[in-house]
Structure formats: structure tokens, C-alpha cells
Amino acid sequence: MHTSPPAPPAATPDRIPVRRVLVSVFDKTGLDRLGRGLAAAGVEVVSTGGTARALAAQGLPVTDVATVTGFPEMLEGRVKTLHPRIFAGILGRFDRDQDVATLAEHGIGRFDAVIVNLYPFASVAGRPDARPDEAIELIDIGGPSLVRAAAKNHAFTAVVTDPAQYDNLIAAVASGGTTLVQRRQLAARAFEQTAAYDALIAGWMAGHAGLVAPAVAPSPLSPPDEEPPLPARLTLELERRLPLRYGENPHQAATLYAPVGTRAGLAGLKQLHGRELSYNNLLDLDAATRLAGLVETPMAVVVKHTNPCGAATADTLSRALEQALAADPVSAYGSILAVNRPLDRATAELLTRPGLFVEAIAAPGFAPGAVECLTTVPSWKASVRLVEVPAGDPWEPTAGLELRSIAGGVLAQRPDDRCDDPAAWRVVTTATPAAPLTPALDFAFTIVRRLTSNAIAVCQGTNLVGAGVGQTSRVDAVRLALAKAGPRARGAVLASDAFFPFADSIEPIAAAGIAAIIQPGGSKRDPEVIAAAEKAGIPMVFSSRRHFRH
Image 1 (cartoon, rainbow, N blue to C red):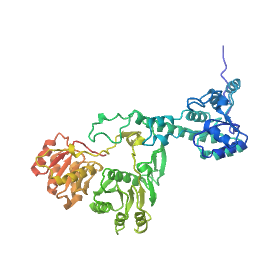
Image 2: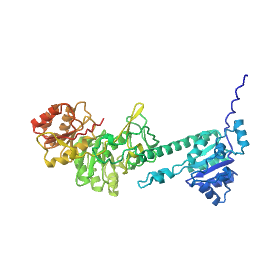
Image 3: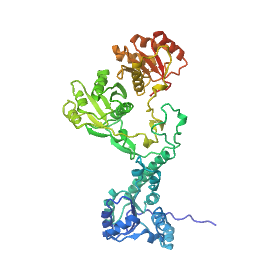
Image 4: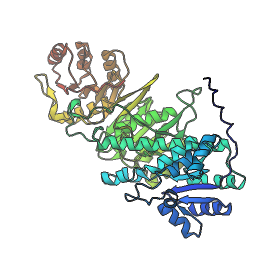
């Protein structure tokens, strides 16, 4: 028997009056205003628990959700709205006769709007002292379900998830109802919120389940197989945090996105002064702050095009900055600076000398005198950017991973931020580095890990005096670093981020008067390189750990 296909549903109505709403909010901000607006329009309000009590306390008529469902709240509030009389009223398609008939048969009223905000999971899960049971109790179940249901059925139901949306809803109610465009936009915002909420919970749960590497590993040389495996799925919710004028070049649009809720590292920067930050500024600030953060003593770093061209530690921050700027004064012009201590006035005054210009200065904080000095004295006072970078683990929101985009995908790895242990080094030459050279070797090997490979660092004490970066051959990187160091190479130490593939680098190193070499080792030609160092009388240390950085 031939059966005719069902008639297509009627067109979705544009403006839908708001006569009955469900309100269930954790954040009670603006609830009094919302309640008055709904009451003035004669809207029936169905509500839950604390929300119902808050509305009733204002003298507003409220129907408790238990009256609608016929069931009391149970399991200490874990179950309130999860009931067909609630969800059918939200999900009913009122242009379909069958849906309308089903609701009428069971005496279920429709909801024209759902007003919900979620348990503040982040407020507990983000606390270092939070207990797992506290966080778990703030995983909202009914709230996201209500929001998703209303957002799915936005053709007929408006969903409001933010107190900032209350005024527009009240205005729409007074004007005859919500429009399809309004409901569609509200639904989009609602799905953004539930996605962000689920991503936050997923990230926390990965840590709780031991799927995220700890911020501090038990041993600096622990092999990768002792760490938790990388997560099979990484869910991130990124929000636009900082608009940028353009990208690396003026024809490229750009902005800074950051995981929702994170305020550590550059994602939480506070700009105290200066022109807006650029894409390239942020890349350089990242390079500078990450290097400064590897050292505990007062340190200053000068970065140009993501590579340190000066870095030093000293007893005082001002002395460290003076030495860092002296490493390569030409490159220091127009550079990015970072320090690992609050910037004091004495350090700021060094930057006001004639002939020096810096694009931005990053620090954990700025003394009032330093801000006054830098924003009133130098000729570039209007343009210098002062950036306060908060402490904290910047990798926590990304499951402990450093991310880098490629065409069509994202590369992920554990950050190379753990300090090396000099006790694990091995002297491979007959000659042993003099004891006073140990701090210099440690410093040089710390610096070289933040240079672009192939990378060579030449250091006098805890002061970078020459860097060879981004070369296609290691011997070229050696020659560049030694040329930058000039006479300061004599008696200095030299660090290589990866092994020497040939012995050809040793000859210029010896000619420059380098006192000791540190490198990872691991080349099949290690014996040749060691023999060349032996012949030159230069002590060589193998660290057994590579720090290559593309």
C-alpha cells in the first residue's frame, strides 16, 4: 500500500512570546532585577532550590520545580530538574502536531526560556589546596543538560546563561517575545559555555587521573618512560585575550588566544604602560621570560628576534642588566628585556641612558619608582611597553604540554624547562675543568637551550658574551659565537645545544682561547671530537642531554 510522506513541518516562527520560564542559577547576580522584569510582564517562573527561595524572598510568585515534577530534590541536590516534565517542556517542537499532542496528553507545559548558569567548577578546581571531592561536587550535571536542551531547541526556546544577558531578555519579553535571531545568538553563546565548561573539567580530570606530567619531576634526568603518556585527546577552549595590530607582517591578521580561565605566564600579562603589544613582541617576550625563569639568582635577558643576545646573572638586578646589555650593544637596540625579579628604580635608571631603546620590558612586578622613571625620563617613554607577568604554571591548562601549530595540525611536547643536574655530567677528556668554571658551564648550558639551533653560547662567568644561532652547520654557529665574543672568548666557556658532528669546530674554539666546552655528546664521531679537544688541551664535558630548539 502506498503511503504518502508526512507533511513537512511549518516554518519556524520568528517572535515567540515568553509566558513561562525555568530559572536555576548558581550566580545570583542580577536575579532581583530579572525577577522584577519577569513579574511585571506576568511571566510564570519555575525555579529550583536556592534560586526559588531567593526569588520568593523578593515577594515574587515562584513555582518550585518539585511541584512540576512531582518529585522532591534528592541526593543532596544532585537531582532536581532531570525529569520528562522539565525536558519535554524545553525540547518540544511546537510546529509539530505530534509533539504538541504528546505534551497535551501528559499535561506538560512548554518553557519559552531557560535561564541557567553553572556551578563554578573553576573556582575550586583551580585552588592548589582543593580536595578532589570538592571539585567533583561542583561538576554540574543538570545545568549543562538544561542549557544544551534549550540551545538545541532554540527555534522555540531562548536560553540565557549570563547575568549580562538579563536586560536584553527583559526588553524582549516586554516587546512581545524573543526573535529567532536572538534565540540563535543566545544558543551559540550557550554552546560556547558548555564546551568551555566540559573542557575545563576534562583538563582537571586528566590531572586527577594521573594523565598529566607533574610540574616538578622527581628527577631532572628521569627518562620519558617514567612520565605519564601524552593524553590521547586534548580538549581546549580558547578565548580571544588580546587584540593585535597585525601578525609578523602588516598584511597578516593576528590576535592572542588563551585557555579560558588561565592567568599564568603571558596569558595573564598586565600591561602597565606603552603602545599595544605586537605579535612579534609576544614571541620575544616568551623567549625572554622563559629563559629568565630558568635561573634563581637575579637575572636579566636581552632578546632580539626570539634569541638572547645578552643574558647575565649577578648579585643585583641592576648589575645583571648592565652586563646583559653590554654583551651585544648593537643588537640590544630595539630589543625585548626580561628580568626574574621585580624591577627596581636603580635598574630602571640604567635604561634611561642615551642611545638605548627597548621595545618592551617584562618583569614579575615593577616598583613605583621604576615605572615613574621609565615613563617620564627616556625619549621613548611613550612607546616602551611595561609588562607584568604573573607567576604560576603556564602549562597546566594545556595538560602540561607545549603546543606549536603546523599546517593542519598541532605539535605537542613536554616543555624543556627542567634544569639539568651538573652531578650527572661526565668529563670525557684527561683535562678537567677548573672548579671556578663549573658555574659558567652550568650557566652556558642553561642559556644555549633557549637559543635557536644550531646553537652555541660563549659565557664569561654567568654572562653571555657571544651567541651563534640558527645556522645550518655547527661550525658556522661556533664561528659566529666566537666573533660576537671577540677578546672576551679567552678564558670563557662554550656550550653547544647538540653534539659536534665533526672535529672541525675544535680548531677555532682552541684559537679563541676557550677554557672549557660542554656539549651533550652522542655522535658516532665523539672519539674524534674528544681527541681534538685532548690535543688542544681543552677540557670537555658531556651532559648526555640535548637541548635542540628549532
